[in-house]
Image 1 (cartoon, rainbow, N blue to C red):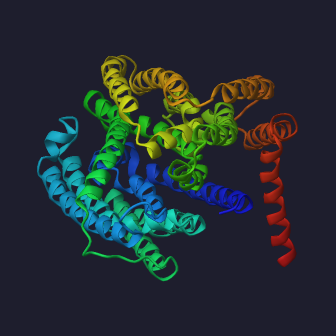
Image 2 (cartoon, rainbow, N blue to C red):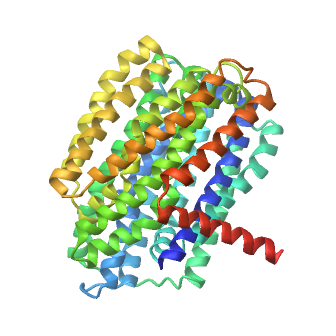
Length: 508
């Protein structure tokens, strides 16, 4: 994929992402109001537990792209079709394991969710577990088709598939909620849509992507290499799941489902903000693996990529985070309803703590491609252990905000370590990027401050004032960013977007 096509891929990815989250912000408040705090909290709790079963993928999906490009270099005995066959059989085994463990989860659900839930909530939790486990098992069966489509860089297809999941989801789930089917109907509707999309991606990979399989090839050396590599990825996924879900579990034990729902709303918004760079990540991962597999000047090229994409990611996250700080409180009242003011601080804490680390995504993906995980994995494990130790007393003392403080504090320590690790042990040049990010942050704060001060003198719950403040800040931010922050490459992305718009208008 050439540079111009990659710009288009990133732009299309972000258009799809914005539409995805616009749909999500439409569904969540309706879901909260239709289910109520308790049942929404129960759904969030069950969902976080099922997330642990997703770890049974053992990092195979993330490992696929690395071994795909190694197969394409002709330096190895195996071919892509051999790799596909081994992967598909592995996912069949994993799906079977999910079902077995899922049944065990259902049987012992009372012990997992704790004594704060009522008898009715425990019964509903069992049904939700059954549906979500089925959804997860089928997702594993189709995983190879998603990985292959990403490896051949058909990014637009995957973004459209993700878009359809979110757009079609409300068309099914909202009527089910209105008919009184509750969280069970919501989850069942989502599962039905997900399964249909998975089948569509499989058909695309077979017909357009021309994916092929060979099941009579079994390379023990290759399998061992994949397993060892994947286990490190699995380690990060496990720790991510623990880090993301531990606050829900702590709050479920110490405060009950209503407290969990407050944290879940904040964590959901934080997740949306932090997942915005996924569009860039999805496009650059294949390029990073190509550099790792073929190029001699790896460190220099990766350092340049890190500076290029780190700046863009920081721009996006900074705009959305500052916009939320400005408009978050009235937005939460409008979106989630009364009683979610603590979610405002939770969003800010969780996003701010991850801002720099998420901007270093190129460095983290390079380490993954190079199979140099051990030190980073060890420090992450220590960080999460510290998070658990710190978050329990803070959750008891300050509730959901206390849990967020513990998570933010420990993740900040982890980010500081990673920054110096990338420089001193891996050999990447990140000092240029850090200096640029500091300059960008200063400019952004200068733009943000007068708008924030203005919110103390106006009625932000007035929809016209809300829109005026938000629109004014976004407009000034984008103008200042274009004139004084962006470099030529970044301005080129904007120009490409404008050309796409002009072509669309001229064709219509």
